Amino acid sequence: MHAITIPEPGGPEALVWDEVPDPEAGEGEVLVEVVASAVNRADILQRQGFYNPPPGASAYPGLECSGRIAALGPGVSGWSVGDEVCALLSGGGYAEKVVVPAGQLLPVPEGVELRQAAALPEVVCTVWSNVFMIAHLRPGETLLVHGGSSGIGTMAIQLAKAVGAKVAVTAGTKEKLDRCAELGADILVNYREQDFVEEIERATDGAGADVILDNMGAKYLDRNVKALAVNGRLAIIGMQGGIKGELNIAALLNKRAAISATSLRARPLGEKAAIVAAVREHVWPLLTGGHVRPVVDREVPMSDAAAAHRVVEESGHMGKVLLVV
Image (cartoon, rainbow, N blue to C red; front, side, top):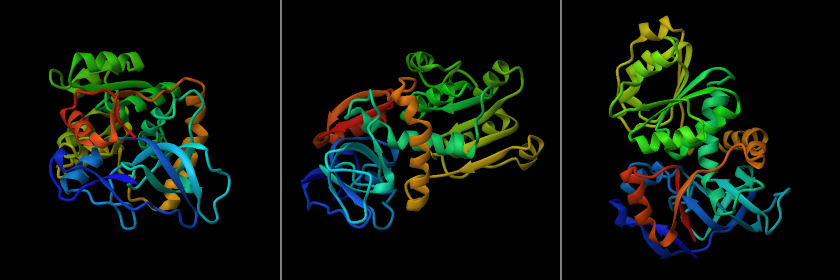
């Protein structure tokens, strides 16, 4: 088979479409013939040499895919060869075939095209686990999503609206904010021109955001705490704004607020399977009912993954960029 390899860390040109050995499904695993994968920020970090796969994971980038089951490993039940699926991966999605633990498989939702289903697993599992399983967003509350036009952001907007929450987003252009509004965002903040703390305070009559989904990390830490409501919950899922920040504990105490920080890739198999099962129970009906949809900016041949990485690094896209075999 062919896969995207990274002989040496570097820029997009470090991604090489090469012939590699076929993987084989082991105990509790399935072999998926990949139709599409999607570009995530973690893939870019891996390409640059900053985010190695966890032990035992494929060395190839790619944290999600869609395709068809080609073979079942020992001990797998409930799936059949030929089933159309999408999957949460620890790596290996940038390839023609990938091995997946059966607990991380999802059926392609009715009404979603097979290729576009590749845009779902990583973002849906990230949003559902952080916003709902950890931060417990409830109907009537306000969710602030930084990077509202990203894959994570576009899914967070839709899921929050589907459960009856109010949604605020930050983005860097009017065009992106307009697209967020089309998805249901209620409060639109251009972070290049406006202070999100002030805008959230104004829009909520001083109450603040009940839940904040943050991909920036250190750069926004102090301002995120200021923007939180009493009993607010800050969920940190990224470090695009740095890894070390100063936390005002008194401000956190005064608001009786909580901060969580999670990653998905290195979690134990059991935790990932639990998240996938929750997503299948709660989110898949929203997808099959047409209430939530993957947002795909464009499709790029997987062999030209370098071009797709350049698109994502330039941040001019909306939603996900897919790599199609």
